[in-house]
Image (cartoon, rainbow, N blue to C red; front, side, top):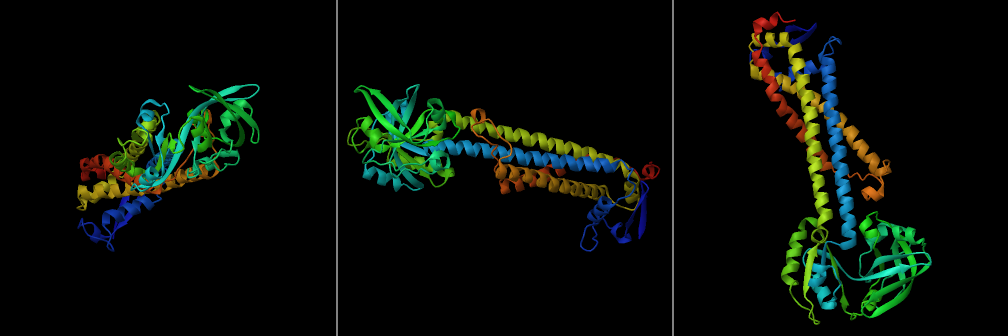
Length: 442
């Protein structure tokens, strides 16, 4: 057994582990053994390396925690806004060619045969008809322009249920008028309306002015201003009659797909089987995905990915810089030990591996602390909604946090590998330490 002296502390190393660089100690490489002894060595508390190790550990922990929180919040925000937009327009819309190109409402036949074709399309999970009609809601004190969206009994109202504030969702029929209306909280605030109240709606077109009296059945709120300010829901029968269309006509159909990743494939199938065909009234079928219908919103959401990469680059840089400074301090402080190891026959490569293993221990501890902090904050926010936001600005009332375990694991692995890679170059400082000079180093 050999005793090495360095920085007022000792390190016991077996003879057999020194003169054969690639030998093992109980199936453990001696570089790893020495690194573990150095890491667990308490030694002199006045040594400079102690705060350096603590700072390096804190740098890795803070960097990882910030990355986890930032990525989970940005993902949560993207998916929340995306789900709201999809809730109003579904994944794919099939409508008249002119409707999709101009935004004006042109009727298209949505009879049983077309609905069957759309429902049997591979990848499509649900199909619902809809019809749109512009109108004006008027009270004694105020009035408001709205877009009436008529929906049939087959329409998926899950999204509306999730965003209901008060009241109930009536049964929307395609055979008779219920004269019931769902409005947004924004409309209710502007017109001072509550559930159960009645309101007149006026519709102006080439046929003149028509009035309908509706009962407010429920109020929803999504905080997505461009929809909350305009969209109110009624039954399909009422909207089709207000447009003076035939019973089998509608503005179009909204399609939901099983897997959003396969949206383009399903759209291509719709294009091949449905697009450019005509109905019995001479209207031409066409289709668009939700991304094509709302390019501005989805382009804005895609820009958030750039924010993620910027945050990751900054945090990994912080962690890397603190680790580099910490490793250099540790190498300089243990110059005497490095000289003794070289004098005993250890190669530069083996000693570099020792200090890289030592860095792995520091990074590992930092990752553990960072995971506890980062995941803890994400879980706390997702379960309690502790941090609030102004919905008028951010479209959500609380900070959305979505915990993605595979992504968290990927962040851990990437941080570990990149940090070790960054430390390879500074570790070559060991090759410039000469045994004879290091023996006299203080």
